[in-house]
Amino acid sequence: MTDSGGRQGGDASGVAAPAPVVHSQELLREVVDRVGHAFSDGEVLANLRALTALAATVEAARLGFVQELSSRPTTVGGPTGRASRFLMEGLRLSPAQARRDLAAAAAIRSGSAELPVMGAALAAGEVSREHLDVAVKTVTVRAGIGAADRAPVGSAAVGAVRRGCLRTRDVFL
Image (tube, rainbow, N blue to C red; front, side, top):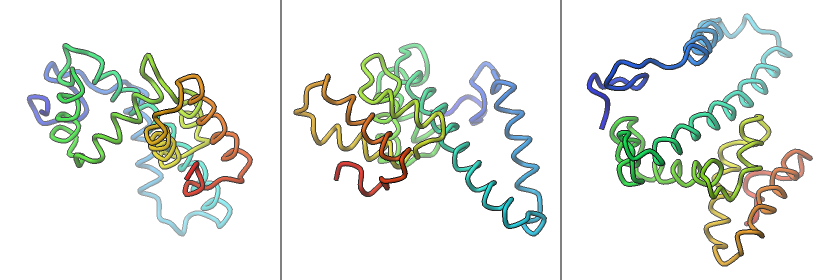
């Protein structure tokens, strides 16, 4: 289920991505095109940190649109099955990745989001998508936990990651 032109940046009506997204892509292409030796050692480290945080922020924005897609009955996504199909066919994601994206998006952005603090930390670049996936899996595995008790799971993980004392493999496993 791609749009009529097979594009990823717009829909069948020709709607393009918002200007800030397009502008960000243009700016990042300048960094990509720059020869690696043009950066000092300190710049390499700073750029890695900044781009890792930026990737998390971009992922949070992308998951917001995944949730929006799955919640709108009039879009190509509509019910979750159709949203999953679009992610697989329109964006060429594997079925497993499409499922993870839908679960992560629902966990941080739906009306009944179980991990909103984790979503905010992802948007701020403080945790990675991998951290989020582990937290979502943990909440799913511990489905017997009451909804009121699940939010602290995300909050505790975010706090531990911020303090630098928690790696992805340590998150509640």
